[in-house]
Length: 356
Image (cartoon, rainbow, N blue to C red):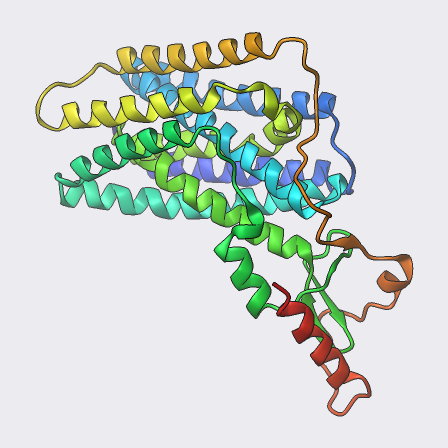
């Protein structure tokens, strides 16, 4: 597949443009409802599908099928990521009007991390053909592990990343609007929203370790791998607000995702030396497995409505009062030496930061 340099720049420019439009449309913090989320989800899916149709028309059916197989894999695995976000937001009691900002920044980070992973994966495959066996074995093992642990859920409180963050980063115990950092008593402190963002980024890196090898099982074209990932990720925020309250209904989705990972792992094994499974067949298998999983889930839980995710225990953080917000100092102002209250502020920052 011969991809001209201008096409790479055009795709990157388009991604930056649509992110800017999305940020402008959500510049004001507000609760995103189901209708708005459904509208934006439709927009992002339409963009991804239109791009795939363009590839199909320009480069042929083979390339088009590879793109749609990769896009479907990434989109379906992203649903599991959305469910993890819902648990994280519930445990942190993040105000719903501030969740979009965290997800927007999380998607930016995900694009950068996945771009780096894709570049590294392409170099490894080009340099060491045997690495495909490693990827295939990892996918089969991951699918088997997901199948065995399909009823288990992430526990933010037990996260080593969160424990390290709270140990080493001075942090307030209250949300201050959409601020990630605040200055109080001359000390710059992280807000709980920054801890949430760090956890969101880390979870996406973990999911990328599964999804990047999975898409390499259906195509080894870096352009297709990147664009399928990018257009699947761009719709994650809207997908979250659309599906977060429906987690309890997708009871068989993890089983379907596990079978997809096992399938693409086996396909990668066969692809190395034995037999190449046509992309059309792979796309049909993936579509069938996911469709059956979703339909079976909805039938098994029919009659159940939307329900917010709930975690046990009292919320660990609160919302800052109007007086606390008014008392904040300019964030980037230099701390003056010997200013009254600096030592006390530093001590308070250390006490809050060491809270575990």
